[in-house]
Length: 76
Image (cartoon, rainbow, N blue to C red; front, side, top):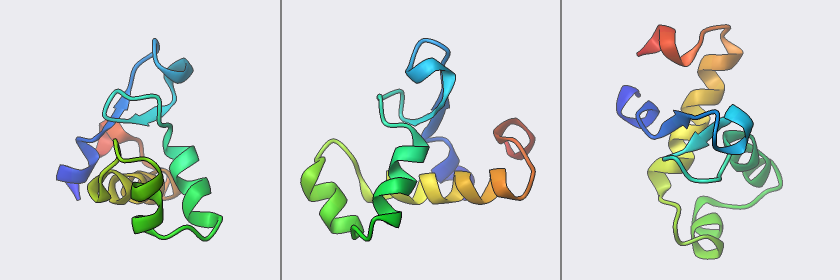
């Protein structure tokens, strides 16, 4: 899981410091919204080719950690 978490970046200059995918303007919360809307991984990647399957898995891993009450810093 830690390899996936390396894809999650937090930069105050990108999306107001929200957790994002690989320094891109793709907040984790948007990825979770796409999944929750019923889109498959393949559909997400087809619509947004700059994303990779590992980015989606990283978003889910990050969501799991934050729901458990931990921070990205604690896990890394």
